[in-house]
Structures are given as C-alpha cells and as structure tokens.
Image 1 (cartoon, rainbow, N blue to C red):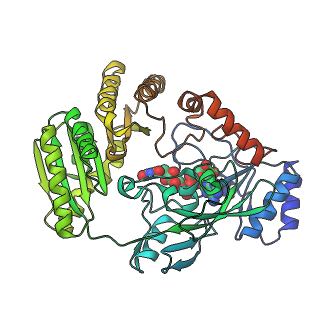
Image 2: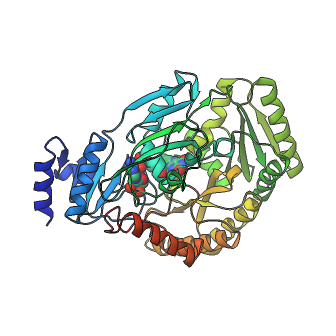
Length: 457
Ligand SMILES: Cc1cc2nc3c(=O)[nH]c(=O)nc-3n(C[C@H](O)[C@H](O)[C@H](O)COP(=O)(O)OP(=O)(O)OC[C@H]3O[C@@H](n4cnc5c(N)ncnc54)[C@H](O)[C@@H]3O)c2cc1C
C-alpha cells in the first residue's frame, strides 16, 4: 500500500515537496527526546499551503496512511518522532508571518514560523509575543501550539494557550475549520482552540494561528538570591507567591547546577549556596525596583545568604546567563537526562526535598533547575558515560520522581507533553475516566486513527 500511496500523492499534488531521500528520512526521524529509537518515516512531505495540507490529509484518509505532523523536531517527549509506515508532514515551509495587526494587538502566522523570528518581527512594532520557550531560536509556533509550550515568563504572562486568539486546523478528513479569530472575548460553542492547543498533532494539523501580543515592557531588572538550604529557596518561592509578588521570571538552580554552570562558563556564582533564585522584573524603573525589593524581603524571610542585584541592563543580562546555560552545563558533566514535572507552587520545597532523597536513595547525581515560580522543575539525572546500570537506575529513579510528584498533587509534565515518553503515566496522572474522555474525543475527531497514532493515548 505504501509505495502506491506515494505515487498517488505525487500524481495528485505535483507541486508538493515529497522526499524519500535517505538523509531526509534520517533527519526527520527523531526529536530531542533521549532514549527513543524511532523507525524511519515512510516519506516526508513539506506542504506549502493549507490547501496542500488539506488535500494531502484527504488522500491519506482515503488510503488509511497515518500522518505525523512536525515542526522543528525540538520536542522533548517524542511527539514528532516517526511512526512506521506513516508519512511525516513537516510544516516548516509554511513559515510566513501573514499580518501584524497593531490595532488589535494580534499577529497572524503560519505554523512553521520559528518563534524567535516572530518575536523579532513584532518587536519592530513595539510589541511582544510573550510565550518564550528556552528553545525559541529553533522551535516553531506550530510545535509550541501543539505542545502548549511554556517558558521563562509564564508566571506573569501565561503559557502558549494564553496567547491564542484563534486557529485554522485541518481535520483528519481534510476539512478546514477556524476556531476564534481576533475577538478577545468569544464564547460561541465549545473552546475548540483550547482543545487543539496541547493536542500534539493527534486531533488536527494547525495551519494558521492568530496570536495575542502585548506592549513591549520595560528593560528587565535582575536579582540573584543564594540560599544555604534548598528548602529555603523553595520557601522564598512560596513566600513570593503568598505575598502576591509576580516577577516576570522566577527561576531556580540547585548547588549541583551552580557548580556545573561555573565549570562551564566561569560565572563566579556562589558555590557555597545550596540553591539560587533568578528573579526578574519588567516593570518600569521605580516600580521594578520596588518589585525586586518585595522579592528580596521574601528571600530574607526564608533565610537568604547572599543577594546580588543588577545595576544596568548589561549586568542584568550577565546575571541571567547562568540560568540560560544550565541545561548545556549539566550535559557537560555526564549524560544528562532532563525531566519535566510540576507541583502546586506551595509544594516546591517538598518537591526539592523529594528529588534529593531520590538521588540519595538511588545513588544518582541530580541537577535541578527550572521555572520555580510555576512549580515546574527540570530535574536532570546525570549518568556516567560508561555505566551499564545507568538505564535501569534511571527508569527506577524516574518512577520514584513521578510517584512523588503525584503524591504532592502535581503532574508528570509541566510543558514538554506526554508524547510517547510518558504515555504510561497519563492515566495515573489524570485518572481512568478522564483518559476515557480523551479517547472519545480522539475517536470523534480522528475515527480512522491516522493523526499521529500512538502518541499521547
Ligand atoms: C534546548 C531545549 C529547550 C527547551 N525549552 C523548552 C521550554 O522552555 N518550554 C517548553 O515548553 N519546551 C521546551 N523545549 C521543548 C520543545 O522545544 C517544545 O516542545 C516546542 O514547542 C516544540 O516545537 P517544535 O517546532 O520543535 O515541535 P516538534 O518537536 O516538531 O513537534 C512537537 C509536537 O507538536 C506536533 N506539531 C508540530 N507542528 C504541528 C502542527 N502544525 N499541527 C499539529 N501538530 C503539530 C508534533 O506532532 C509533536 O507532537 C525545549 C527543547 C530543547 C531542545
């Protein structure tokens, strides 16, 4: 069936870029998720328009050929990895910014736009696209929408879903629907945009998005706070949340990560500290200073040992380097396996304690950093490069971590998604009845099961 399908596709859509070249298949096989061994895709299609996507999906449905939508392949849960016998549909050629609507503070984009390109384009109009995944220089808006990506400013500005006004989506039968548009309020019917955001390509292919923009805030002022215990840093986060301090960034790094960052780029961060918080305000000068004063008071109450405040924008940028480098610095220490878990923000101290207990119990090195203000941390398990027991110990430690997170009322993924990597943990997280509802939605929207099969459910 497969080769004939490609012939039908090529004949029906002669302008569609379609490749079975071995190097192309290899390049589109995996994503940034470790320890997966995906097969090669049947072929890779690079549609250039909504009409081409719709026609392609109609043909795939007629021939029962599964499809894997794909953006830049930076995903960390295996959402875009190839599926045996499936056509991978890369949206990267649909990369136009269609309109910047300053009057409505909105932008209309195709899914293949790289997030950084969108940010740059709207900045020229004094506007900001607020969701800011750390991968913004490479990931695409389509991937951000399909994973409901988070980032470093979610605490104040929300996640990708909060920036969505409307979507254009190609359904599993090739029909094209629009959900929402430029209205900031619109409650006609079910919230279909909300349904497609975070659905990881299992319910439809997003071909256009209308996104909310905000006015450019003031340059950021930055504070680093070092703590003698990991719990104290968690208490400071909980204290800020309790006191209503809402900085635009509230990030954490533990001692292991601090040392790794210093080793990688000699930033001179305080290595005697057990943890560090990066706090940023983007309020105008005096208000920003006042916000950081309030953050400092919460840190002092929690028992901070050292506070470092930026004097100007260049120094602020230098102070934030450490957090930017955390992931790469840990990767230099050993084989780093990053996790993505979230708990209610008041439980951050408990989560940090639980992570370190797991490290002690399993004899594993764990570096922790992440979006503490959202309760969303990225514990990174560091394996030795030549350790035959590493994979098994990692599996056990991950199980411990997810059980601890669920016991704290959290979730096994804050922003990377279930994908294939955490499928086994969806039901323990959401419950059997909720997963039954998800399956019913999937069956209603994709009765043939051709959209990204085997992902999430
Ligand atoms: C260094 C690094 C840092 C990262 N930092 C963050 C972070 O701060 N926050 C965060 O949330 N994530 C982060 N990620 C993970 C990743 O970048 C995000 O999940 C991102 O949103 C994926 O975008 P992408 O274009 O690479 O999508 P892909 O990986 O190609 O795809 C991701 C999912 O979206 C689906 N998809 C893609 N395009 C479409 C479409 N048009 N229609 C329907 N489905 C589609 C795919 O099928 C897949 O399920 C990071 C990754 C790396 C490598």
